[in-house]
Length: 253
Image 1 (cartoon, one colour):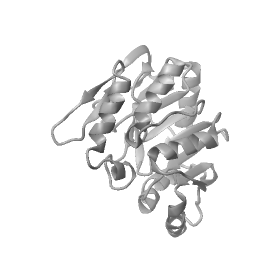
Image 2 (cartoon, helix red, strand yellow):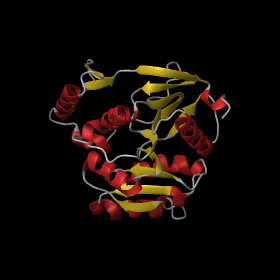
Image 3 (spheres, one colour):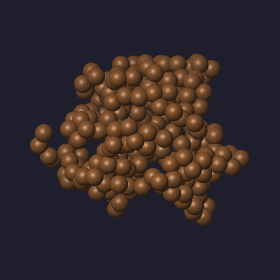
Image 4 (tube, one colour):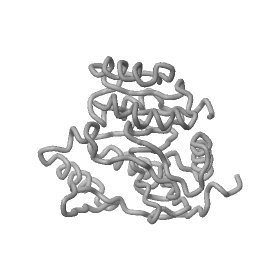
């Protein structure tokens, strides 16, 4: 993997989960430990160090000082890597599903190559690993870039007014600054959304609905509110396609 790409993982109260899922996934795919940067809040550091020593004594990532909340973690990452290329993964990602299988490090390199070619600083994957909804194509323009796994050339220090909307904010703030982002819909993310820890710490007492409605008020031209029985209220970012890239990983440079 290019030394200019760093793998970054913000984590919150998931010291066991990250070892069993994300670090296991990265190690099994040959990602060097010294290219991984784990951001945790200072009061949780000892807990993470103990778990890492137990599970991966010979595969220890760089430990970095995080900040409170999801928004704080994202700003800590941007401050640390402004101007650099990073791939961010959540601490419960257990893998990727690819319509065009390739080694993981090669995939990240290809995503950055194609994003650069298309003039996009932010790129992402299909939000789930449901093969029925995945398409072996990339869309350039506006598409939701989910926070569980994405890459970016870190150009900006963004505003994150709410812990529950950081990936929505990043998608639209990059789109509004650069005019486009790119999403690779032939790669799906294997993870469990709404798992214990992480963002779930912030969803209670109506916080989810309040955050989504406030976000919608700020960006109503680019999104809509979605309400579904039995599921939390969320926001759907509009898809505005400027260009489709079919079979992106088979295209010549």
